[in-house]
Length: 403
Image (cartoon, rainbow, N blue to C red):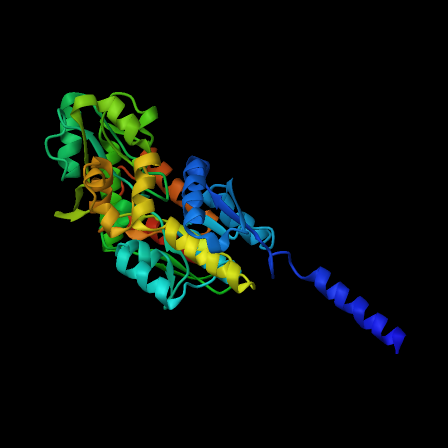
């Protein structure tokens, strides 16, 4: 009998040692945020913990890990990953499939849906479940321009004409899978991928090989032919520019370049087979996720803290300190946010964009090759049939990535 009890106790000890450290009774909590917000987040966590003495026995640490690295690290080693972490919305499906995110409670999901803009809520949702807390609606592209040169920022053709007349440059990165869809999506084309629960690509929804796609490609070719055109999206690398398609991350450089003539606007319309259509593109959002926990008290702390860090009050403070554009409706309505020309222009543009989903790595290289061919002048004299043939090859290759 004694020998049997000894074996049972030994087995219990082995089982106890095999349980992950965070499974039960763990009083540590790890948060991953980008370096730019590490100090800010530490201050906000301190404020939260002071207001919640019931969690006084928890030690919360904040580590600097970027959104892209955070998702990759969580997928590589979930046990060693953070309990709360920032990530970009295009990583949502992979993180859910890997079991790295716990869905929000009905109460918190309702708060998120009520308090944030529709785009950010959609970016945090899969099926009928909300898996993350929106932090920003500030990842996308729009137009920066010199208002002493550009008289009509609403029309691509007018912008290019003004730049040509002034001997100035118009910058847009047409050999990028991020910027290039502005034309194709604006023309009404589709290019998205479906994934299964493992994150594998199962289908490509694409119709670039169409009359609309040909019209979009013709518009890109026409832009590239202009002597004002320069391929690029970083205003810090632009010279003699009067207009550039760029994002909020370059607002400081744009203000320095254009000075008193600094201005912003949503993307312009472009000519599609004789009709002016609005440029579209990708929109992006930063999200805050919570890793599944087996300790109910720790899970409650994670959810409460994540809800606080994504609240309107903290989003506004984050905007004021590091310039991140809020997704929270009350924060977006703040006078200081409204006065930010870059965020206002992006806000207008996001209404025409789609959230960036997951795309195979080869897609980005394929889009670059298409843009490089345009820049090289390969399609300058191509008729509609030749352009359709090129787009059919592009489309077939996109589809092949999901087989």
